[in-house]
Image (cartoon, rainbow over all chains, first blue to last red; front, top):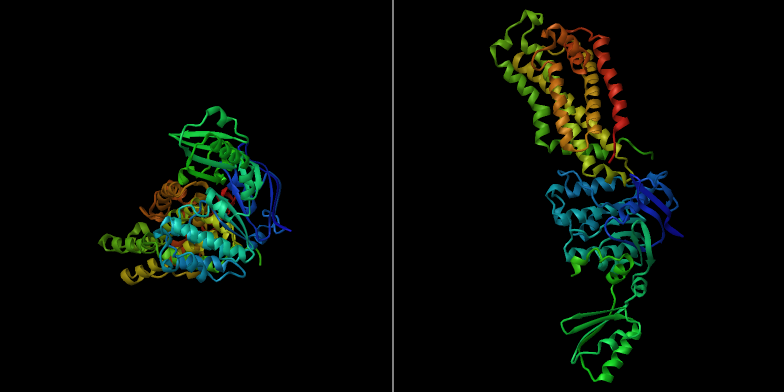
Length: 307
Length: 249
């Protein structure tokens, strides 16, 4: 039985539809990603799941409960890390953890959680004196401190350094291993690819695609990328005639082709027939970035990060 | 368990945070007593004045100091804190837990209401110990007058938080309201000594009415339903306005 059900969700602000008919279900114990460009409606969608916003139309259920009508019951099963939300500056890390665990009927022990998130040496530090990354880790801890069945994480690793990001991913995999369902809004392709069982790509308020990360990549038109530096120029027409070819890119003498497995075979044959050697030959699968570009007609939101 | 508008842990946290704010401690708890001590040091303030019915100005100034702590806490401290909580998403974060954000609102009112009462106690003690000002001779009437004033001020503070989008605006609006409130409470001129149109106008505000009620109770008289009633009516109206316009985010 799905833990989260979203059916034909709609929400407009000032007449402008932000979420325009989004549907998906998340199974128990799944890590489900919501990926999309800025302003695609990702945060509004999860805010409806959290019960922070009232949908204009559509149906949302969390563990069979309506997040608006049964808000209090939902808060007992769902933990949330919000995108923009702070704490009182003078509150220490320990006080925040103790306070928020006191809100829940059966809280998790916050000590190991703080330990895992690297907050143990910061327990007596006031919130106002924490770095951006430390604040973010505290928010993750607060989302998990109620020992929720479902956790919604909006921009989980924003502001974290690469090491903390990897530690956090490991933590998310561990809590999932304990049966917790994770709904993850993300900007990072790498994060989505590493963590998510399935991903909904949201664009302009609609679900543009919903599949496993591998499935999304396979769907992208140029699923395989072949690059090499030929020992002699190749005939332009013969290259363009390669089967399954999606795009050709020249950078200096280096050539990058994207296509299918069939394209790879044909390239090898072409090279052998013309007796051209391919230096530094690389054949790679397309990434989620490529799939994202295909689906939304835009570069991945974290293009600048991976470049 | 019902959606609690009161939560002990939240209240305890807010008390702790109040104590960590030096500005609150000084302006709300100490400043009124300090002002009383400084003014009382001027010989004129210790000379009985027939315009005050034979009281020394320092005697008449104790209720003013009592109201001053209340005004600074309720109109400056609380609205800025609450609006900041909303602006910074603290109320929103609390909405994702089984505790309602209204628990923070309740805690804030209790903290600033409690601080106002503590400030009143400090002012009364200072007046008594330093200048021999008699303690209120109708303690029950005094307490009742004080409580109605606290409620009215907190309700006004809640309206300011409701109407201000940012803590900065709340600070500005709070200050704009604080000065007339201080005037009506008699900070510049005790209400008993105000010329008639001013005294009557001030008497219709919760602060002027509270000042009158406190004066009466200090002298040993029952504060009178009119002086007690004005802050109560204000409380009802302002609370309705605050709950009408208050936004959680």
